[in-house]
Image (tube, rainbow, N blue to C red; front, top):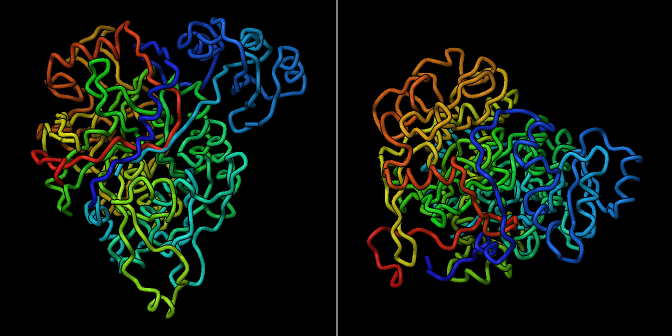
Length: 609
């Protein structure tokens, strides 16, 4: 693999506006309500950055998403119009609209009748940086393939930068494409993938490996792809485009049997997930029966506030309903025993609500998948392009020779997320009655452990990072597609990711625990199992996340260790995440999640690789 520079979609945020987010002790799983927004946002109906903007002397306009506390009516529209708001997009999925308003009118808009919460139409982006052909083997998806599971009949919506034409997205007979629907939500752009990120993601889910004689094959190589473009030519986007795409996936669910949405994108967390319109949108998809896989983010190297990458989960990955995915490094082998966590994978808990994320981890370093010739990423990563091995002469016997057949190697939680999305499609093919919560529970319950307490990772610049393999880094553990496919547990209710809090209202490291109320992991209404308090039925299996000691549901999730192992890190990080300190976000963009660069073997000279 060539070692050229990598695109930094997440890094593009660094020069944008600052964000103020206050850490709060604990947020219950509740629907959005006035009491909650008063707790999370000092009683204001404006998001933190809009508050700062409204109190400034800045002139100009801003596009905002207004969520209402009841069904939208024309009377409400008239009230907003009087306060200077011009509506230009409807977002019924989150009971809101997008408005164009002057900055000086924000406070008046805030006080309009039935306004619940106002946020900017925030920018979004992808989650990639630049493992090879070992992804399916590593998560035991090749076993699923040997038994005939390939995702046939299942629709997966890829909400990204678009999905381009590629020979590996043809049907089994090479007579037509499996991209069965395409639509763009980017103003003035069609659904083609000019950036190259969405096609790469689609290949990890659905590529059939035709152009590489089966070497670079997706997890569910016969699913149908629904291409819903929400990111622009540079991999950026905004909340309203992603929300509109999610809404279309829900509308098309029955027509195309859309059972899975892949969101390899994200942006910083600004408020509780119960108020965030992007989070509310993914919850609507989940409740409509669509499993949603979301990238955790690529900020695991960020130590700006002394947290060693903790509390860097992106939205909507901070929502407790969805399955949030972190990234591992296969280190170039199909053997799971040598796999490590990547340095760039974002860690929990989420800011504001302290949701325990990621939920699971999967391969996301140096993943080879479909390439779009001439795309932005192809041009930037030209040294990572791999030509297809099937010649046009052979193609004349059974495929369209004009279709692209090349591959590209990238890294990021963007690449790990479709591995989980593809696994969900296989599970649905086997049992179409599965709910999103049952899929999530099975994947988490069957996840394997990485077999170590700590691990080191090295970026291409030679920087060394040490990860503790705790619940905020690896979640329930390492995706095992075959084990998840063969699990038969069924339950009712929601499989919400739990929230972490400090026991007794104080920062007590050994007393930090996972809440177990009525609506969380071990409660009476959750899905995790009939014997919810037994050690063998907790979501992290028979052992604590890094050791051999059996964990009891009522015990501390981290045993006798402090959360971060290193007490100096724990002291600093906890004071930021749970204390009275504030966390300043670096930027406001939503992107497809791409890290600065991939990890390389520790101890090598990255310059000469």
